[in-house]
Length: 52
Image (tube, rainbow, N blue to C red):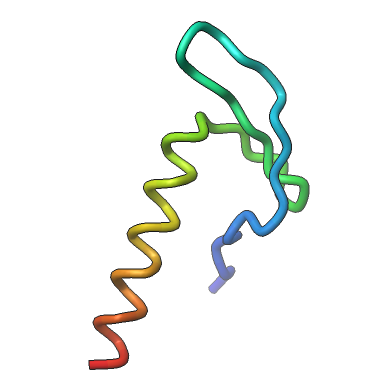
């Protein structure tokens, strides 16, 4: 099974009003920066649950 990309390196590709879009330098996926922050939060919660 393929491991999902954790998007370790991203760059801003566009800004539109209150939204900033970033692109992962490794896999090329583009998403808004709010989604990127949400992914990091979810990952941290999952790691905490695994440690418990």
